[in-house]
Amino acid sequence: MSQTSNRWIVKVVLALAVLAFVGVSVIPIIGAFNNTPPSNQNVASSRGSLTSSEQKSKLEDAVRGYELVLQREPENQTALKGVLQARLQLLSQKGKGEVQPADIQAVIEPLEKLAKLNPENSEYGVLLAQAKQQIGDKEGAAQAYRSILATKPGDLNALQGMVGLLLSQQRPEAAIGLLQDTLTNAAQANKIQPGSVDAIAVQVLLGSVHASQKRYAQATSVYDQAIEKDPKDFRPVFAKAMLLKQQGKDTEAKPVFDKASALAPAQYKDEINKTATAPLPGTPAVPTAPAAETPK
Image (cartoon, rainbow, N blue to C red):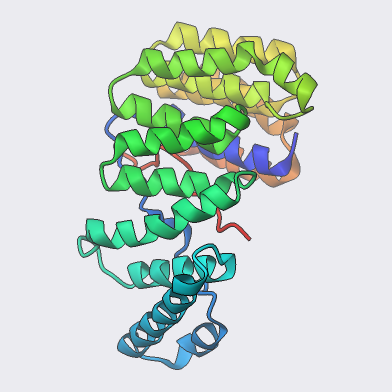
């Protein structure tokens, strides 16, 4: 069980156990890059001493430079990554409500090429799907997620993104079906590529989808099955504790939280203990899909 998988599932459980996917906004695509310096080193090194307008001018110059390279070499990945990062930095300078669909489309164009050129790197595909969903192209987003899942059925970011998209379209049964199919095929997929499908993580996501539809008995059953499959895995225990808390069963939830904390690696204990005592927010803003990290 990798640290990345642990961190992912902690975030998913916190998000989904508190609030249903339905009606939740997609995380802005620029959120994944807000802390990412642009590829152009001159811009990156001088940001601290430049005014906002000077930064914008530098970034626009960088975009034009990369675009000139791409006119000669349309598949130059250094230029594609550079123009992507520079455009994302320009987006990050805009205030809420200032980002236009054309701005997102400018990000989509290099992402489409990078996703096609790097099919093994699913981060590009996830970012592409998030961007398309943000401009309302839900079918385009679905296609991007399906493209990843066709070769990587256990990709957790793509699975959560696709599930969130389906739920935003009021299609919970399709979301549940996708996850059940993933679990049905997990053993075969793991024979072909060991560890490619984290069945416990998929079960936790499936249980969280049931919980988002207030199907608490089904969610509990899925979590219990996962706990039985691997009693030492803290993730379904944590998910079950959150489910109990979501139903207002704080007394029942406490020993389950304690068990999750005891099972969890040290870096997650504080987060679990804090969650156990914190009140449930009324309307938290949680993403339907985790923001992908900048591909290296």
